[in-house]
Length: 335
Image (tube, rainbow, N blue to C red):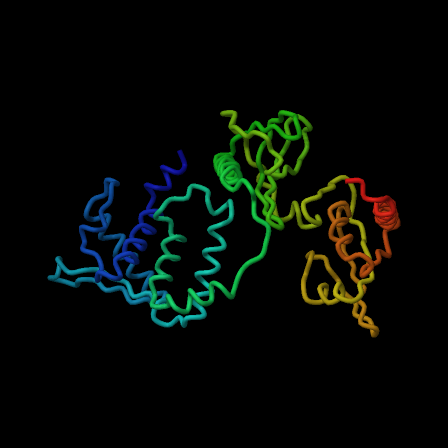
């Protein structure tokens, strides 16, 4: 298993050393024997680890206390600048972000009580900031959608990540159909997770929304991950995760006014976004995309603040939706 291989690696061992040093801060550090864990490592291995750790700490400007010659029974400690220099506000923001991240499904993948994120969160709270944090936690909040089945989503993400790392074929049930897929990447977009994969049944690349996958298992088969595939390049010309690799790029032009114009000037919604500010405060926006399909919902949320100038088929789609909405609201409520 890859997890076991990583656990025995020097990288994982060094991470455990740092965590132990951070945990030992209130008690004054660690003895040499404290660096041994359940893994079978010899004295020289630990000595080399500590020498490397000291070098890394010095390069980062962190003071790493070692017993020194003739003081084998001394203690090792590390002074983390964060806890000495960060003010109440900075520490609170870091704590808030860690707490927010901890609530996401992907943060629960292989979660353990001793995870670094949870440890850092607890260490931040250990600062003498209880009064400040208690007050500010009631005055600074996040308002965003949350997955209703975080545990189930975390399990799917976990299995997909394992399959990506091992280059293993997955069997999924999606919209009632069973498919064998070769995973190519995971994407999180607006709190939704997607699996980019090569579908063996369609013999083409597909995008699968994880919350719509009914079941997901490994098949025991392996595949060769395509060396020329780049996930970032794969989706760079898409809006959301809608892909269309059969044609060239489309030019989408729109005129935005009011709050829509402000948002376009303050945010980049797509890498291809080009803006032209007009004297009346409106904004002409241009995008280059493979397809406009994923853009429809984003356009509709602006109502009359945005007008699509081209292409014509997108204008007609929005017109048709607007007509359907009008018909619905012309009817009396029947419930």
